[in-house]
Length: 238
Image 1 (cartoon, one colour):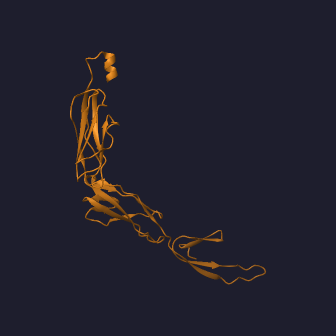
Image 2 (cartoon, helix red, strand yellow):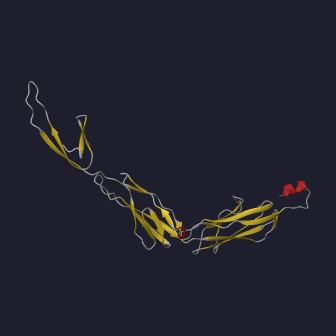
Image 3 (cartoon, rainbow, N blue to C red):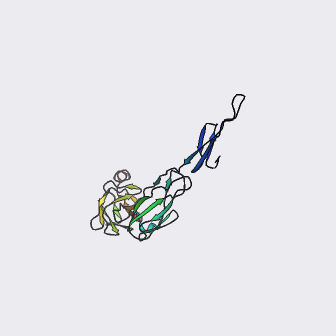
C-alpha cells in the first residue's frame, strides 16, 4: 500500500524503492468453500544503504602548477564535494584545487547521503606543494672535437635542491651521465660519447621532497668531425 517505498514482485517478493515505512497487506479472497480471510497488515522499515568514497592518490606538484582537478567516487554514484583542511596552502571550488603556498595541502572528499544513502565517511588526501625548480645547462667546450671530453654542468635553483640530474642527448640518456648526484645544487658529467654533429642536450632534474622536477631548455652542443682524415677513417672515428 506504499508503492513509493516498496513494491511487490510476482506476488512473492518485496523490493524496496526508497527508505521509509513499507506497508504490506496480505489478502485471501473467498471461494466456494471459504469466506474472505481477514486482511493482515505488516510494516517494514526500509533503512538507508551505506556507501563509501574512494579518493584518487595525489602526487607532489610544483606551486607554479596553479591548480589541479580532483577526482573521487562514491559507491552510491552520488556526487562528491571537496573541502580544504589547510586553507593557507590550498583551496577548493567544485572539483578544482588551487595551490596557494608551498607546504602540505590536505583535502577531504565528502558525500552527505540522500533519502536512500547514509552519509559516507569523509576521506582525506594530502599533496605536497613543492618549490618550482629550474635547471640551467652549460658546456665546458663548444664546439668540441669528436671523441674528446666535454664537461656538461647543470645548475639547479630552488629550495636547497638535492637529488640527481640525468643528461639527455637527442632524446637518449648519455650512458655515462645517468642520475648524477647534485653537489651544492650542481651536477657535472664529463663524456666523450657524443657523436659528430649538432647534438640537442637537456638536463633532467629528478626533484626531491622540497623541489619539483624540472628540465633545462635544449642546449646545442656542436661536435666536430675529423675532417682531415680520409672519408672511411673519418666515418669510423665519428
